[in-house]
Length: 116
Length: 113
Image (cartoon, rainbow over all chains, first blue to last red):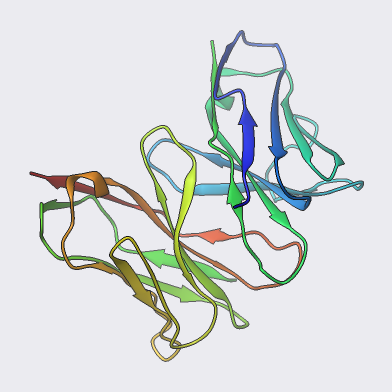
């Protein structure tokens, strides 16, 4: 089945630094990828939708200059949290979707970001 | 807008008890419906899905039926196990290219032996 690999699984960074999270589709081409943020004991909040070769579409309230998304190929999307602050600490999950009519979504295993 | 509402948790059950987690939805079109499960510290795994009215999704003893008349997709299992302890999310998509899943808030299930 479709596999999405997300790295790193956890990261601790200092306030003011930037962190990059990678999401790779291993055995299929992901024409669309989604980035979610999950707060403790809460649901997944969609941050942005990225399509290969074009700019990401951000949800209302998500700072696009802070959360940079790049989807340069059909197998790789990256989320960079720039100038991270403690309030950015969260669980980030990517989801990839292959083209076609299956409408199947595959999720990465998530990245626990802690900003100190 | 489109949304998913699922019952508040936590749900605490003894092993072999019957499980129901209610889920209702609001959608402008004809969505596909999903249940995902999240174990502690992990990402989401698809548990089951249904793509049209009256479809029943099933997996690992869990099942849910797409009820268009009541806009519901309740999750059931006849006999839960300790290993079923996790957070369960109901979700929908409008089956349009480029659209994300819309999730409910999640229901935490805790099963004790």
